[in-house]
Length: 165
Image 1 (cartoon, rainbow, N blue to C red):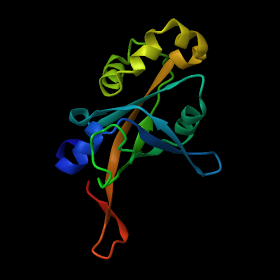
Image 2 (cartoon, helix red, strand yellow):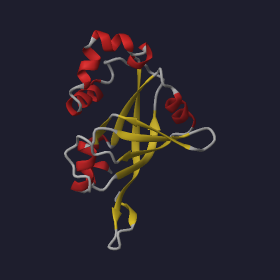
Image 3 (cartoon, helix red, strand yellow):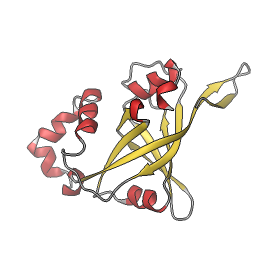
């Protein structure tokens, strides 16, 4: 599915730095978190990572694997502000396996490519000291897309949601 998207959509998935992961709470409410991600079109997956110090999203995914990823913040991407946001709906898996760098090499490489300044936070002893230890123990979240949508405007300026995959 991800390998056959239009160039406009693939530009967003390739260049945006952070997406918003939305999960469902136990009460059925949508809860969203900004997260860095790795887009892997050839495997039809999007990889995210979260620290065990912040387990709520993992609890949500383990209870209900339906998630959405919104790609709408174009800051630092080089994309114009008029770019159509992209919404990906799918299913997430988050095995109970803890990782540091090992097991997430592809994710970290993409994060440092997109956000080179974040490498300072990883290597800086001061930053590491101030960061909760549970942040560095991470869980890999893999999202398998089922539907892809774009937001655009029609001829009257009204925003519309269009399914593109």
